[in-house]
Image (cartoon, rainbow, N blue to C red; front, side):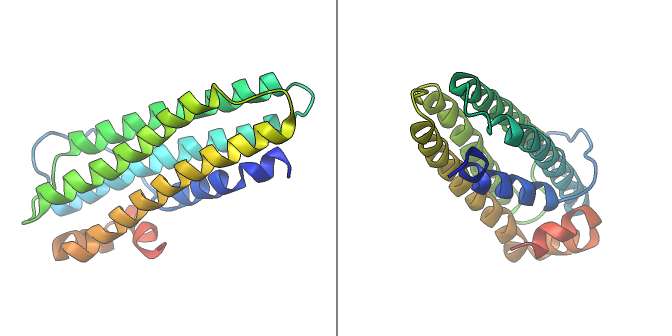
Length: 191
């Protein structure tokens, strides 16, 4: 198994995250927003985050093919994970600053989405800690470790995606906002 294959699952998930939402973000605020404004803000933040991860993931692929300098491969991978952790924290902060949507279940929806995104951020943080312990004595051990770490991140990304997709099912106002907001259209259709 090559390094790109070991990262394949993670890269595919990151690409799907980027494809899930399109459009820009506004700064958000701590007060409630209309469902349309909330949907636009949240999808914009998700889009920025997904694009950032996708770009870094694409840059990571070629670097992971180096079988001669495993220490450099490991450091490159750790750098990717650190960047992903930081961009995930930025996403959490942006979604928090959006405030809850002005709907009956707005606060619960906001809290659940933030919780799911915090789990993604924490999975990247755990992956950084674990990646620092990966052996560089042979390629097989390093590839196996990268695969395990990628699987943990993937599980949390899938859970966050399911949480986001479940929002529309819980709130007719949010479903309508997602339907009316082009930047959210692909996300709700990508289940």
